[in-house]
Length: 102
Image (cartoon, rainbow, N blue to C red; front, side, top):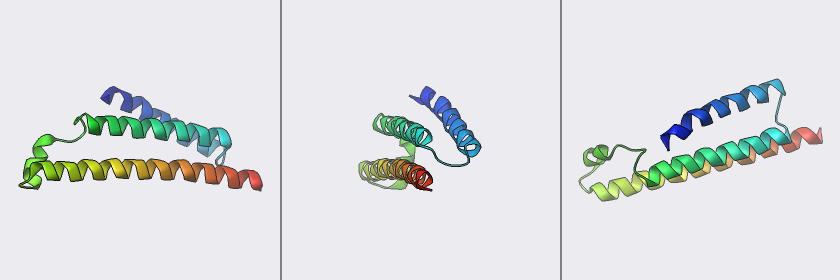
């Protein structure tokens, strides 16, 4: 799954350039942002579920109860990923909508 992240980062950079060139959000850019955010969130969640994102040895240092520490960190990271992606999607559509109302 790691091989998916570099192209996604490049796509995010291309989206930022397109956003700058268009001088704001448009509906096609908001749609692209939605797809990109969902793809990135899905990739991160898949890496979390597969135990490929976090160093398992670090959990031994975090707490005596390794299982509890791992669960807390994974759930927190998953929740953070979903919240940030959701916010990005909603914010892009809100800005595109307000631009079309001007």
